[in-house]
Length: 223
Image (tube, rainbow, N blue to C red; front, top):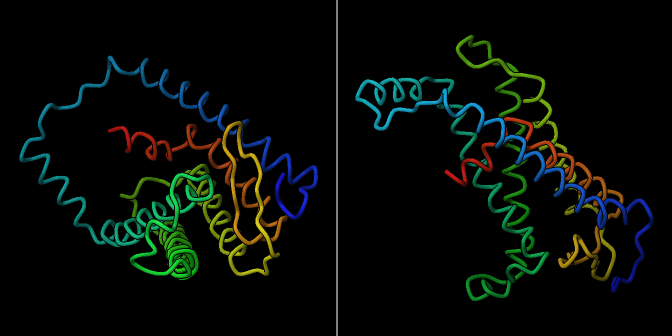
């Protein structure tokens, strides 16, 4: 531990032990989901090429007012999520902000842009939750408890993530081993309780992904 502060037992468990458990459960979930799909493959026969009728039906569906309003929120949500995910990779050494300082100063990338992207993500997920909750259109698939659960997960993760940015920071750098072989470096030490809670909810969320509709995060990248 090269940080100017020491992590307590609970913080240490959440930040350095639970990430490995999270990955194991996530991979087990992926395997179980794959096996369930594999058993259902003989009954799945997608068309090789969509017909004009299929394309028209799809376009008509996407042109519905409620679908357009949903997509208007989904696009900024996914784009901001990508930037947030990419930004987190800097803390484990995948990339360096110095690569982009020829375009704008470090303060812009780490403060201004990061805060703006975080606010866009939080606002769009709250609006999407509100739209989904108030929808009375019977053509929209019923929202299940699991759907609300992962939206709540995302909202809590977003709120705690933004809280870490705006709450007072301690001087120094927080460094800890996230998983064996990978260290995480957090510039300007945030509130440790908020960091631990943010991390814990993120870990629970990742464990839940293979068992929810959010599996499309994985299948979308693959397909």
